[in-house]
Image (tube, rainbow, N blue to C red; front, side):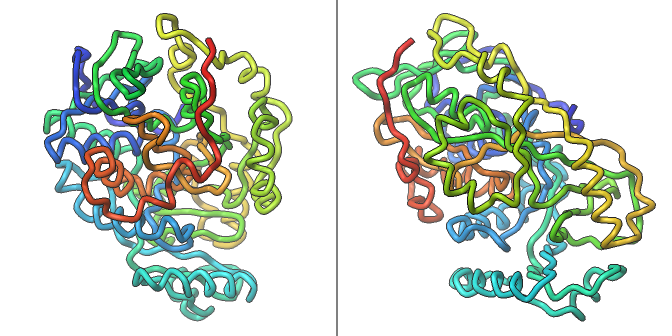
Length: 439
């Protein structure tokens, strides 16, 4: 199982009508719900399982601007501004602190790559800087090796995924938002080509807009509605330690490990740049879209030939609105972590920072990450279906930029001026589109 989540009171009754229906109760969907309710917009969130049950509670908890795709930098800045005020906004501690973030470099080539990133990112006045070996030793003492340098951002931070999403949902409910868990959305309805409702397993909600924030499930949902969304899933394996004193407060990523301090005194630890990509039927269907990305990032993934092919091949790709959907058959994606990768991350960390040798593993978990060909999310309308909005494909970056993404989506849905330029996140950039729907 994934990390323990705090309990959230949910609504039992499905309203017959609302302004906006949000499908998916992860960081993206809940942030959108909170942003909409703060604007006085009537909104209902439906979640097939439990809030933050999948990747939104299984990520590293980094909240950073540094090293992001340039398209995401303005959204990351806005998200950090929101994280600063989140505890007061939701009435509870989400564990956010601006303790800084550090990406360690082994070679001058890595340093040059970060300097090139900085040349572009400085237009947004980021506080990132490339630092030398002495400054690295000061910030993260106790390393067994001499690092060439690092990319350092003193005002980046971290938060607790298991706390943040549930508390945000509770805050949205206090403002009038409706949250229905254990309720899968089967599809949407249109009238004269425009969104007019969402069909769930408990009935239909009439609405004018739908936001799909379905994470790793989004491609399947879209496909049944005749929308081709190029998205694949990759597995990340993560662990947390029991409380440990001494090591730094920074969120740190090395060449083959990453760690960040937790509110409980332990550390979340992962194997950086090593995810598992399963060979599944969609791997072949989407080969043209993902081929370039697969070549560029081939050193970051381990190909898994077995494990999910048969499972995903059995999942229906089409279903009628009056029959059970695949989302009702699997309420939560709860993959097993890879023990070898978990151990590798621990071993690599101890080799670099021997103080971690005394750390005891308290738990390990796996999470399926929704990825796009360019590793940038879709946040915006699907032009071919007026009233339908998609926010998915965060590619492992969703937790940190979730609050900004929620605000941006709320502004796009309501027609308000967007906080950042939404163009880099448009659906149509990926070449997907609307195809004939058959059942």
